[in-house]
Length: 231
Image 1: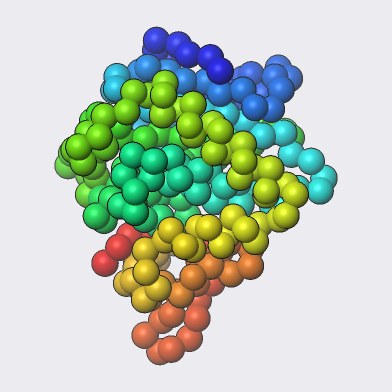
Image 2: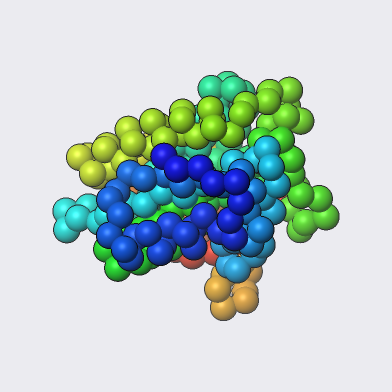
């Protein structure tokens, strides 16, 4: 595990390390990021006190689909947050963690040849204001874990779930994700890559981890890529 005082982006640094041949399992944490990135090109605010970290997985030919590593990371983050706030957090597809409907973490996957770099940001002490969705942090919930301590627990959880993903496939990861997700029937809006939006009720995940929405006409819509909001 490596820690730096400040960097532009731990994901960018880890992508460079991946291309240089660094082994799977390394974690890089920055006390502060100046150019953190979220999904779909968003800026991820990373002040001192929050967790900003990245790791990488070297893909093997027998591994499940690389995209499902987002679920692996999500269940590891949820499991770690639940050490501090039992039964308070809920997962939202594909990999957001919510506390009382407010986002507390984000995950970004990026590819470099045979490596998938997984960036994880968790609002431990601070959260941004004025965004299109509600946000919160763990300190606002009455718990104040140090970033280094939080990452130690997260790295252990991620390693366990990665081993299950490799050894048993996506099924146990999907099962855990569904156990910790917001309830079936939750109303969601999915903003699709083509700019359109679909509203429906949460009906779980398919066998490959894609989102299933029940539409107003009773049909099911399987969504593989979208930005999802609670209604």
